[in-house]
Image 1 (cartoon, rainbow, N blue to C red):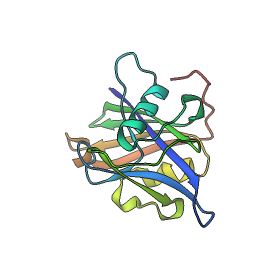
Image 2: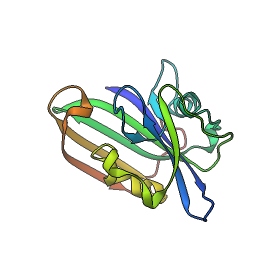
Image 3: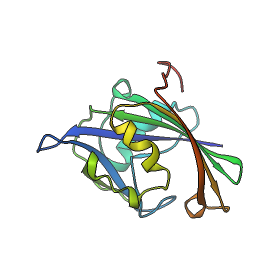
Image 4: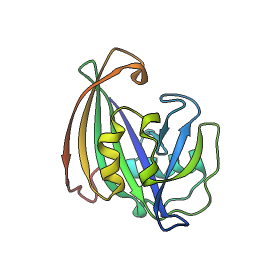
Length: 169
């Protein structure tokens, strides 16, 4: 099972509403959909290091590992087999201005305007809680073969209010 991260930088917008930085994927799994910056862990890399690296590579923002708050652990099953394990982080502390890359087009979005209809089928089940400060462990089931973004979402289990140990991967 591949191990990945997602990072959701957040800020107070001009009108006082909380905004989240989303990316429109320009290539790869989920191309054309919105999500947070993130990607696969490299050999020897911790999930926090991956979230920091991917956020910088995809949108040019600097994030201190200690500024990342663990918000979730998500397991994705495809046809009954483990496909992806994802560490979810959020932060309100970033440096720089987001810039587009070959992989991603960044956009600050008010949390009540997140385009769930242009995201993975499961995102509307867990992301609103994460953006409101909750923690979650989730398992999501897809069927229909490869690739995952063409499979059908068929079920889920969620556990809210989970406490993550400080050094837990």
